[in-house]
Length: 101
Image 1 (cartoon, rainbow, N blue to C red):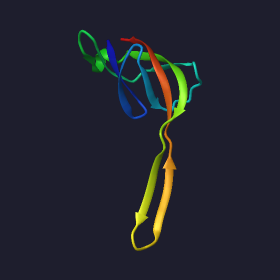
Image 2: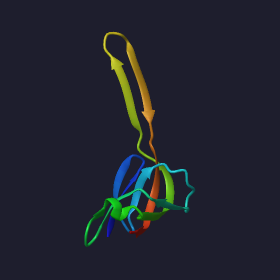
Image 3: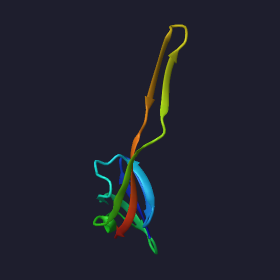
Image 4: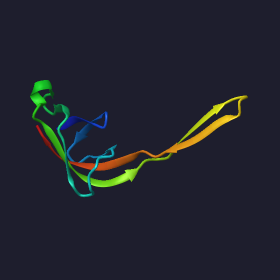
């Protein structure tokens, strides 16, 4: 059985036991998390729309981590303009425990 959930503006296909990285959630380590925005549930048959309006996916927060550093460099020739910026996206590592369909 699998589910497609939406969080942080992205969609993830998850199964029980999966470990996923989602955009940072304001939760502590080892706390429970529930994703209520379930788009589809699949298995023997695919359920979408009104069939999954009460479905949810529960999991556990494993860690809060940072992604790889991305360097943003802006440059305009002949004018002497250049600007260097860096960014590290923060993620929450979540283990999927149960799909409630």
